[in-house]
Length: 465
Ligand code: HEC
Ligand code: HEC
Ligand code: HEC
Ligand code: HEC
Image (cartoon, rainbow, N blue to C red):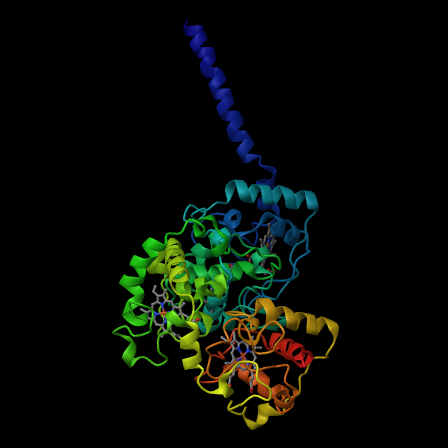
């Protein structure tokens, strides 16, 4: 009996020591100690960039995507610190050590097994629920909270931004989202006294800007589209009716006439829902304006963002209620509203009171060549992709100014098929109006669209004559 116990114990000891020896002979770890530890640290607390030789790798397993890490170690990635890691220039920039494919695999394996950081919560930011509007809001934060002052990005083909910290070109292919989110929540936890910056951004804003960084360089990023999700089909107009009463009627009025108690002192006035045919409105537009608010879609910030209050299901319900209730103006109301003949959509020539672009812009010629590719792109934006609302909904699919939203609009949308009106409108004028909107009309500013996209749409508009 004693003998048996003893031999069992011996076996146990053997297993135990075998385990220990496996850990200490992790070939990746041995390699890292030999080849990397002279510059990088693999244990310890975060330290100032001025007291270390190279970025800390204690959290390397959380931080990098394995495919990027392997490529980087084999010398196949762009340098990350364009002005040198030690931007005080106390160390000369060096080409990074290159190792073989087998070694890179072994090190990447060691990273993901052993260099994990318990502060990073797995799934803290679920990219499969990240919307395009959130990326746009994240981009705004990135630009407005100085991020681009220190981190370079590729903005529509142009490299922009400061260069002394890590480049974010293709960042979406380099980082793991949960690490970036944790880093952004409090940068000094990872890079103290290193020139890092703590931004005054809400928890929600941090999610937006982190998600935005994760889209950089990922051309086929799959954005979440809530209006195509299951819950959007199981809406309740009854619940939506209650929501409308509790939240929307204070401005839009109990029957959607835009006459709620808050309305009288607002300019622009809350939309008159009773005059809108909601089932003709694009789903993404409705969702975005209710969830993210007027400002996010280029309209007035007097229209609040309801996402945090109502949650996606609540937004879906109130949209279902509006679709069921508001069908657009009755024929009689229509003819009363559009009193003057000159306000009919699609007339040619068209009465035009649009303000003129400033002198230096009005005569700017379209810098793009009118070729098939540019026109095709312009058409795509005009008919589908322009955010927050594709142009066709007002200007019409053929550009004749008779889109689904055009009726009841004073002044009506421009009729791009009308030569006698369009011949007097220069490229620069169109560019200025698309970028800034036409005040006190339904033509809103497309501030988030890139210059190039606007010029492509103008080429397409010229084709509509
Ligand atoms: C001679 C010093 C030195 C050695 C040796 C070295 N590195 Fe580096 N490493 C640097 C410096 C400096 C940077 C930052 C500048 C750059 O990106 O080139 C860096 C960057 C990195 C990065 C990207 C860090 C970031 O910004 O997120 C990783 C990952 C990395 N090294 C891993 C390794 C591994 C693994 C080894 C060993 C196989 C190794 N390095 C060996 C100096 C070194
Ligand atoms: C004044 C310059 C500055 C500004 C502004 C700035 N950063 Fe940084 N950022 C740094 C420095 C310095 C580091 C540390 C890099 C290092 O030492 O390796 C850093 C690191 C990061 C990292 C980790 C990168 C890595 O590979 O380790 C992320 C993510 C980041 N910043 C996001 C942001 C965001 C988001 C903003 C805007 C809200 C921002 N930064 C604004 C200087 C700046
Ligand atoms: C504090 C006042 C206020 C409240 C409360 C409010 N809105 Fe609005 N809403 C506005 C204003 C102002 C506009 C017009 C914005 C503009 O034209 O720039 C607007 C516009 C809209 C539009 C755009 C209509 C169009 O013409 O495209 C929709 C849809 C909308 N609101 C839905 C809602 C819903 C749903 C609620 C309740 C959950 C709500 N609003 C609550 C002020 C409000
Ligand atoms: C919600 C309706 C609506 C949408 C969506 C819309 N427009 Fe307009 N647009 C108008 C109205 C209304 C006018 C007339 C404004 C005026 O008379 O000043 C107008 C006028 C214009 C003009 C004429 C400017 C001038 O100087 O005469 C251009 C160009 C134009 N829009 C381009 C676009 C493009 C491109 C898009 C899509 C990116 C777009 N619009 C989306 C309603 C809209």
